Length: 128
Image (cartoon, rainbow, N blue to C red):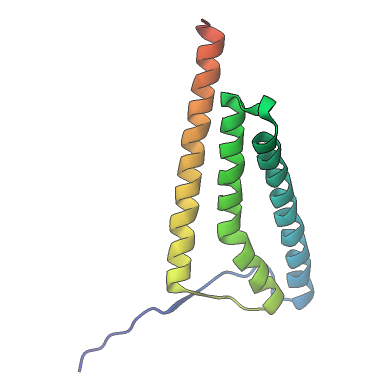
C-alpha cells in the first residue's frame, strides 16, 4: 500500500475574518466589477455600432476592452461568491483554469499595449 494523496481543492486567502467585513468586501467588489463591465461594454458597443469609429486605434481600444472583460471575469466572480457564501474553497481545476486564463489575458493585453505604443511612436516620430 502506497502513501499517496491527491489535491482536489485549493483554499483562497480571506480578506477579513468577520462576516460584516466580508459583506462589505462583497458589495465593494460587486460595485467595481459592475462598473468595469458597464464601462467596457459601452466601449465595445460604441466601437461596434458607430461606423465612424472603425479606425485602427479604435480597434485596439475595442480589443483592450474585450481583454479587460475577460481578465476581470476570470477571478472576480469567484471572489464575490466566496465573500457572499463565506467559503474559501475552489476546485483544483478551477484554480488552474483561473491562473491560465488570467495570465493569457494579461499577456495578450500587455502585447497589445506594446503594439499600440509602437503605433503611436511611428505616427509621431516617422510620419508618412
